[in-house]
Length: 296
Image (tube, rainbow, N blue to C red):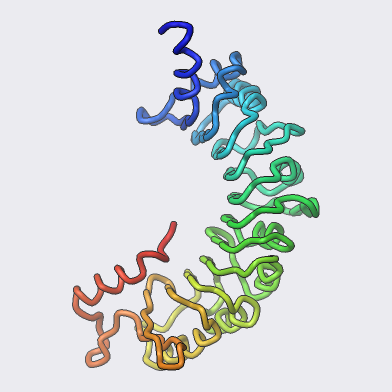
């Protein structure tokens, strides 16, 4: 490779890196190169690292490399949470997406404050005493993914439209915190121990503009669900005039528009004549209709 083509090749080669133990990805040894060659690290725009086990030496190289990745747009770090690798004072002006396995503590809060362009954030868990974020942090945040307590700390005062609670327990008392988003929350996916009917009522009171709603409840549902239960859920869904798709613990609901533009919700995958699941083509059609909602 000649001296003229090398800079172009280096920018392309190091632009997107995924480090893991998989043979499909870049090996962890690349961190030594990036730590010693900050000129190469500066080419990285999208960086992801996922390792079940990573030693102190690897963390040292990773910290050095990240300090040189000043033009990052996307950063995913899933490693042992014992060692801190993120720069404490470097400002990531171009960073738009950040996901990590670290708890929301004062160090993560400081990092988030130094990335003012973040639009999507994923936090694995919340520290026992979740810190208050700086008031000016995350002014462009549109999507949050993480545990329920971290969501309650991050969402208020920020323009979050999409919330995905993938761990923890979103109970009724945490819903008002989500409603303190400065934007309309239109996408909500949650795990909860609460019974679905009271939770739907609280969500309808505080977040009535939801368009796509998924609830995974560990609360015991009627087994099998009764017609009365389905009717009660359908009535509760009337709290959400803009709702397009709804899933409750794996049950996908369909709806039809009425002459007054309201939606009438139907019992999910249920044959009313024998109280059993409907034919396979009905199931497949329902999955197809809900395809736009089922993000993960």
